[in-house]
Image 1 (cartoon, helix red, strand yellow):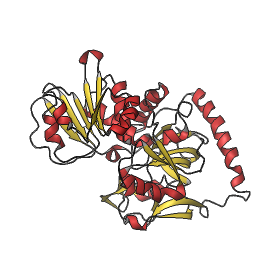
Image 2: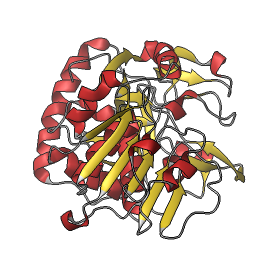
Image 3: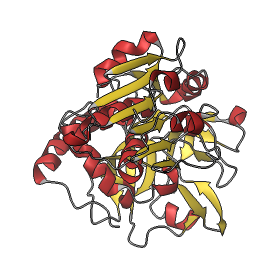
Image 4: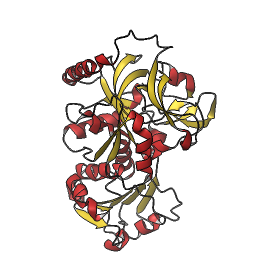
Length: 382
């Protein structure tokens, strides 16, 4: 697997204009010459350990340099090159609110949209605006038997691999909205295409059930199921979020406060279940409604042993971060869906980088509609 091919000249020209606008908007931030890379400091939201109570905002954290990832991590893709980004924004996923104790202190954050400011890559040039999920699970350089998190997006600068980035479709969605998509879109795209047989033909008449449709991953799952050819997209959510989910393309809405989804459908009525909730007993309930002729269940939140899977069905669980050191081609496919108007993230709550701890508290409370976005440059208009 190689990084995606260079993007089209037209998209690059559009991005150059946006990059110039962003540079002019930020040029007044400092009239002093930039320090050398070893002396540069940046604002960041940092984990000094694995203890969430110790996470803190640092206005003067060291800026990362190219080569950082190859120095710290092992068994990276053989052809991966590093790029340094000026981060525009990130977002909060439940997995972002915890970390391991290795390579600390370091900034947290996985979703990223940023401007390339330095590169070892033949794929991306300085000035390109790229996006991706840099929250990969990777082998620790000093001990490949240990897995640690890559991270780094909650900062003014970050280093990433070109194999996990693509040119951001900034002409199709606002930058802040794009920031809410990489991890959830990649998760859903892989769940549906790797484990559930998508895309589907219209004649297959698929019914897809998304558990937890108003959250970030659920929002992406509803839209991608529709884009991939599902005839019916059902979802569980609260009644207060019916309009939101319907606006994303859901055709059947189930209020989990008043009814159980496994009581709504008969045996064999559901073709695909995407579980973003992780409720205990989900696999067993799923087997009571999935088709015995190629029914697929995929969970990104529930890793309990499903037991014996009935004949004619599959049940899979996976973590996007385990597969995300090489995601450029999947991102290119997601770009096409964004450009076609088939994928967006309309539910946004925006926080500044210094407010990341508050965003974590909101995430921990549950019931987030859409995504919580971290505006690193404090510009909520881009």
